[in-house]
Length: 370
Image (tube, rainbow, N blue to C red):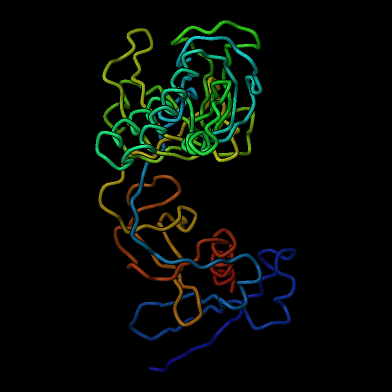
């Protein structure tokens, strides 16, 4: 018996002339090899030159293990992060002497918001100065004197003085004529409830200040999806006001009761809001990454193509791409599970698969017409 072998190079212009014009003068992109032997089956394969294909959009990635998650979509409403929201109330009676900060203004921690004339505030300062004088005449470090001084300082803190202001009072021996209202956090003034000249009662609300660096999102989870949601799952939020922005965070907790009208349970998520774009009261669309479990062998969904009814990837070997049949499993969030056909770390084509499939089929078409 005689043995015949020949190699026939296929011009890529027969596939996509406009996409790959420069390959005509370069090394062949792929070659179809045929070998026939009397009494044996016909065997053929397609080889695609990786270096020639890279400039034309073919990108290589690796088979990897990863958790495959589903994306659950639900409606949400932006709320204040209650751990970063404070209500400032009057600590003593008096009247507003000066108001310097109003609603919708940004404030920094310890920034002065208002000054209040308060007879009680003046009295506590004078008592503290008397304790200082008595401690100076006697033993200032005696336990009883130290205790009185500490108590005096604490009363001044309760009435709004900072440690720096208390130290200045002790040094100058001059009382502050007005009680100072300071912001305890960095944030934005949501409400203010006093104006210059207003009478102030102890316990009266003066300001509401909230830090908006993070916010809460209340997400409506339907009864059918309830079993898939749990704490610490990733969340992405989008709002109509900023359609190109995505705000990320994680599930904090799941509500204990169900809304009988909507048949939903509220999940609370902590959302990052570094540019302060999200505002409490906004409606949003939430995407929750659910599922997961054990990492699975997976490739990007676009890396798997159907060739003659067989799921196929293009695997890299010796600087060439070779079609490799695979058995696939679930597809979630743009990734497809691979059960057989490749192993972890194998390099495969992840972009440009349509062109590779077309070139391969064109080769076989040319073979049939030979």
